[in-house]
Image (cartoon, rainbow over the protein chains, first blue to last red):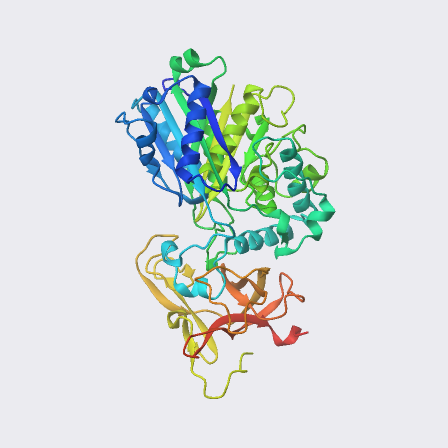
Length: 387
Length: 149
């Protein structure tokens, strides 16, 4: 389904971030308020201009309660909660509302404030028996390791490539003012780090942390009134899993016909935007761990399965390579406040397309960007962004 | 094998609905009456053809390692830490054939992990101990005898 000429174009006209990290004192809602005020300032708007808002937080408060701080304007304010893909779902929900004529300006707000350590999900919330967690099989890091292990085996990818992904993330983060883990590490240091779940070591995983991002969207003419550099949200697509995908917290799988919601969401986003994966000049991919970035490169169509080995070795995904991936260091260097993470990706690509990247700017004035966020139990959201 | 419990200690299986027998252990899956898709555990409807009639089926006791990893940090609750404290353990997915792969603990030493494709057979391991001393077992796969090292 291609975007029709009559469809209302939606632009991103403002972006704001509360940097990711760990902060004593502020609540998740405090971080969200800061990001929202920064996004409004970036757009040259006030809260009273916002005609529709969507918020997302997995564990850190009710997003719509922000109206008590930002202003009781009566604005419609649905909230979404879709695990790690929450940010993408919030953006999609707001874009759909604008296209449906609900308003001309919308705010999208994502935030979270997680305790240290891996997530501790409730089996019942995933429709699983207590046995699955009690016997030590309900840890998200295991899923990523098991998927990566099989992928490396099937496609001839080395653990060195996994380490290169992490090394690239920390290199990109070193000069990025919003990034959390900015200390460069060598491929050798990353490979030699303690294992968490083989083939993944300590430095190949992102950590849950704290942060918030807000975006301001506007339709058509209004967008160009607000800024000289609006970024077109050429498409946003959301998909859940279909039969044959390999998802987190799966007591069983099929052995063949491998698919994924990322394959489906990316294909839908590219088709709707009328661009090809080969057109993408700057990308953000879900990199919960190194293997996820490698796998998602192929699942989203940016390369063929197995091609990642050469692409990472040749620096093709570096900030100045042929297809820069995770120019802000991704989840690996920023950590993952679930509700904010997908919007961080969009924030970074918007800045890259505007030519004002906070960290390393992809050269050559990129005009086509792509974002991909993935969350349990198998939801992906992708965007194509253009200028 | 997990027979190193005190004689007379009470033993229970972690979730009896997962198995149709415990000695030897047999996993109880679901089979769609309409399209023959199998699931583990048993579930009330088919995820492929959406039919709402699934029947219980015994799953094969042998398979091959489809993927593996090891767990090197103690998971948060509701994980139940063993009586002797957390020690790293192996787990993986085992291909039982006919397009069904099951996740399970793998018996063995994390320093000597299996390889993808290794033949394995179903067994039970002691997972943790209840407050009253009851030993709680779960299913696991272990190296098939012909490749035991």
